[in-house]
Length: 133
Image (cartoon, rainbow, N blue to C red; front, side):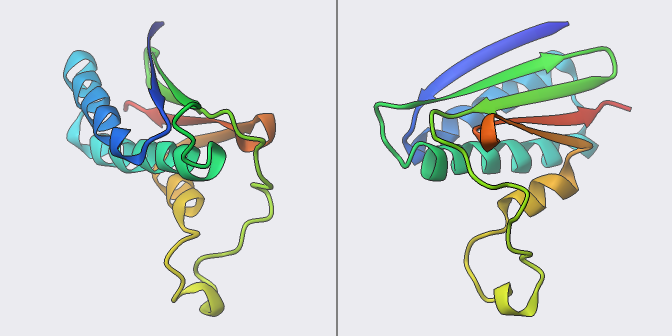
């Protein structure tokens, strides 16, 4: 297993650092185009949520991202310093009353783009898994 870690202060503009991190991983681990887009959207969404909701954009708090490359899968572990949230009882963004809302789609999107998603520490640590084949 190969592993790469990065930590960023909780500033939304640091998403560009995460995008570069994913681009570098794409080249290093030869991630194909079919899953690259899913990874980019899911991981940046998860990190954005960690910055805005988990750490409440407190630049003194960090978001940690670890990439684990295994034989047939790649995992991204995102962890913030927040207290977590009730990830099991989120509003359904496809319900008619939620269609016009500007937010509330992040976890829904991640669940549909990842092969597996795992929540730990009340949702302050999320593992996104993508199968390579």
